[in-house]
Image: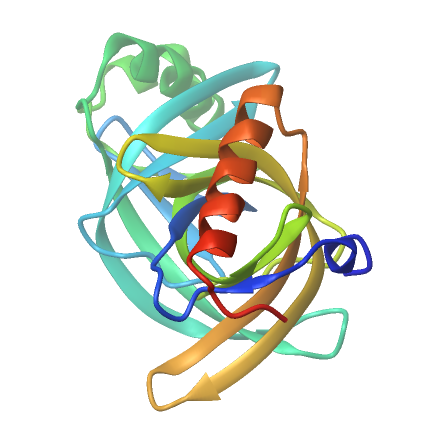
Length: 233
C-alpha cells in the first residue's frame, strides 16, 4: 500500500464507482459430454450466469462459453494453509449448443474411456462419461466491485471475492457511462469482513499496466474529485 500513499486518496462516499475483476479459477471436471459439463468448484456459481471454460487435454485446447444450470453443495475440504473451503458441484450447458468444435474435443476423450473408437461412435451424442485422467480446466468470469477510496496510484475496493496477496489481476473501472479504465491490479491488501449484508473483502489494489490514455482518464477523474471537495485520507 506504500505506492498508493504517495498520492492523495479520495473517499467515494457520495460518488458511486464500480468495476469488474476478470477472475480465473482452476476447477476439476467430473464428467463431460456433448450435452454439457459437470464441475467441482470451491465457490458457489450462479444459476443462469455465463462462464468461460478453458479446457486442455492431450495437447488440445477448447474455450467454450457455458451457462450454470445446476449448483449443489458437495461438502467441505481442507486446504494446505489449514483452512477449510466449501465445495460445490455444478452442471453447465454449452451456450451455443453441441457445436462441431466441441464434438471434436470431446470425442477422443470418450473413445479413450471406452477403449474402442467403434463403440464410442455408436453411443448417443449426449452420453456422459467420467474423466479418468487429469484435465487442465480454467473457469473465467467477471466479479463486480465497488470503489471505497481512490488515488492516482491505486484504490481500495469492496467485493465478494477474495484475491491472493501480490497477485496481478486484469480489472476495469467504470468512471462514467462514456469511459472505462482497463489495467492490471496488484493486490497489496485483502481483508475479510462480515456485517449484516454477509461476508465481503476490502482489497487494496495498485494500478499497473495503465496506458497513457487510461492515465489521462484517471487523472481527469481525480481532478474532478479534488474540485468537488470530496473527502481525502
